[in-house]
Length: 171
Image (cartoon, rainbow, N blue to C red):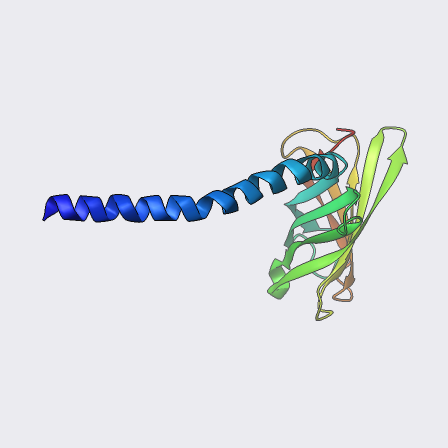
């Protein structure tokens, strides 16, 4: 019985392998044909991530309360995500946690590149502009300033322990 089971298993594997050969050949041909395109597109993308926790300034109605952010953007790219951002933000004192999306702009300064992200939640409950203070350093040692347009009267604040990660062809 065991011998018959092994024979059946071997025959099934052989049939599957014969049927899979054309599929594998087509897959390999596709990979070879498109590998140059995907590599050059990937090399052309500059990605920027802001991540951190900040605190509202003294002039805010919720002074000293924390806000947080993790936002990813494509600053310079040859794909459909060029200039687009996606991420999340929260305002602790108001119990607001939202997905945000928006745009990014690169700003050349004498001390390095600054990036300005304009993001908002789709329901309009949160809208903010975040900008890093160059130069960018590795780790949670960067300053990111945030100004909130919505909710009204919360104003803005800063994170002095933010991660600003910039990757791409120029970095």
